[in-house]
Length: 371
Image (cartoon, rainbow, N blue to C red; front, side):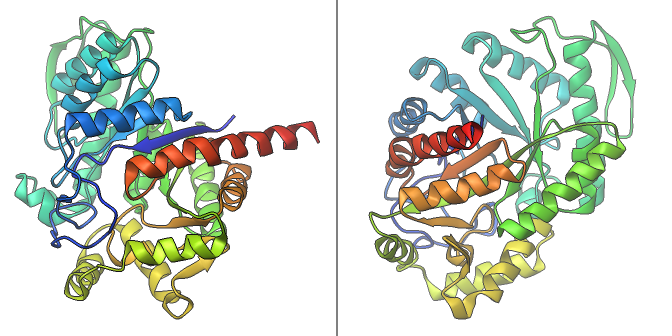
């Protein structure tokens, strides 16, 4: 059965996208919204709404103006009962030994509800602002070694490690995971280096949504790469969601999201996408450009309009709850067992998704099994 994930807007939230100031240091390109600040009260409401709505997991992002994912996860434990916390970590900023202890603590206090999202980082400007100046492929070599060392903390009593980036002597982790297993590693990236790391070390490969055809090509490529390593991966696909009682209303709602976007800021975002290192961002930018004369429609109920102002995870499912559910089922049918859904403003969108979309998806999948 498909598992649903959503994301906490820990850099701010609002009804309009791109209405703030452009900030090249942020992964999505935008400064924190002044409409809804990421207070503990607001983020905890989102976590509780996700839990009620049938989401299994809350992704806590890293980078830019985001609040620290580990601190957020440890705080949200007290507001939820079953929701899992997928918190992001960057190998360049936290040593694997320290992160293993931090993760194990959150996992222990939450009763086994902690998950790991490894984020290598795609913006040289943002990375430099945090003191990381390694080139693209070197960062991915470090990521691979970070994951390998991290896994050893959970499966070995003690070990020595001598690598390119990390050296440890008699390393150990006194507090293992609650279920005494190595945590699954969630990981994404569209570059050749990222795909190699995913095939060799990840457990869940995370993709930004694209057209059904392009996404199927990517998942088939990853299945082949994983098979070469005698490994099997789980797959997650991510979308924004824009709903309406009718399809026409949904498209009106979509256009409203970017109605206050600053044209100058859109131009800066385009320049950043073209000169940046992220292959995934460039793929989304190409989809947007190829659909500009079609109001950014790239397929049935698929919209690239948010890519004008968002750098990552910007393709949206636009339509009625039934239409959005139909599209999700199509992606599940090509191999995705996890779907990450979010929108603007986040709280209202995930409440609607939990109420109107998730039950429809599950009903459609049950009906398919019965056929």
